[in-house]
View 1: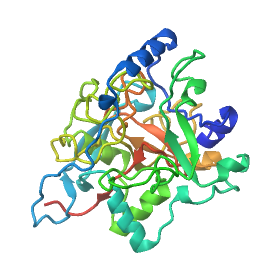
View 2: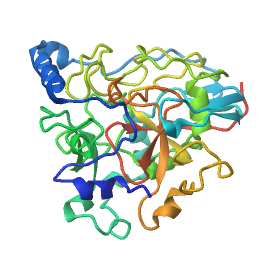
View 3: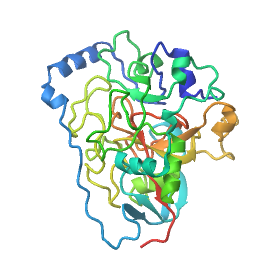
View 4: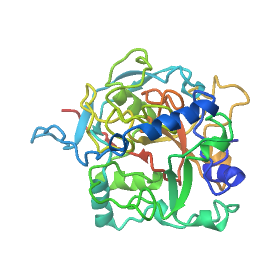
Length: 365
């Protein structure tokens, strides 16, 4: 049984969040990390601390478009999954009906309009439900979210996928929420066009309902990310038109793509369907409950966990599939900047690299 992120933290916390990111490429640290840190510190700070763009102009849409801000994704047959990590297998021929999808991730400005209209209070702004998480210490029951903090060193050895190392760059931060995505000392000034982050499943679902939309299924999301093209997964090289991590994660990001952290929506070229940032920038929530593979119950191994995480965990949080990777994905750590990549995310825990977009079931153009 998979433990929730919060309970993994309690086991290895020491004041930090032990965020299990799943299977990843394994590299040794030691002298390599020390050398990377030395190179990092020698680079011009004007390059490292970029005065990043705060808005990227999106192409104008036809004034007569039936669903402004959305793109039509035609029906087709998707080969769901990939072959890099075992949770992406086996590949599945999956029919997908046509649908409309937001052409960008939901932005801070868009989410602010929803909050203004509805009075919605996000999960990260509420105290953690003690009944669902009875074993958490008091400080972790405070309203908050998981925030990435770049470590200054990785001494002590270990592999990047070890919980000891992971806990050096993920921190549960009381006061972090969509208005203060890096913690109480941060805000949204000048960041209206950035993707909203530190939202949980209930927040994304509430926004989608307000719009008359839904969250995409995993198959819808992946079909859109492949630009509605049937066939095998494309090459697995790090994309150039996406916000990912260039350099040795987590200590050196050369920002060759123009950004060290989050980017505003629409700063990179869209795919052939006209959809922006499906790969990189932020992970995106889907409506689908997490399963450890694409195997069906009929051909799953007899010891495989059931496909209902919420039922498995009883009083603890369920999990959903998230897709697309984020600005933290690098070749040496998280090669999940691919349409077929997938990862679990606790339903009731926001993170500084997690956002969403919505879909609409309606007739095509």
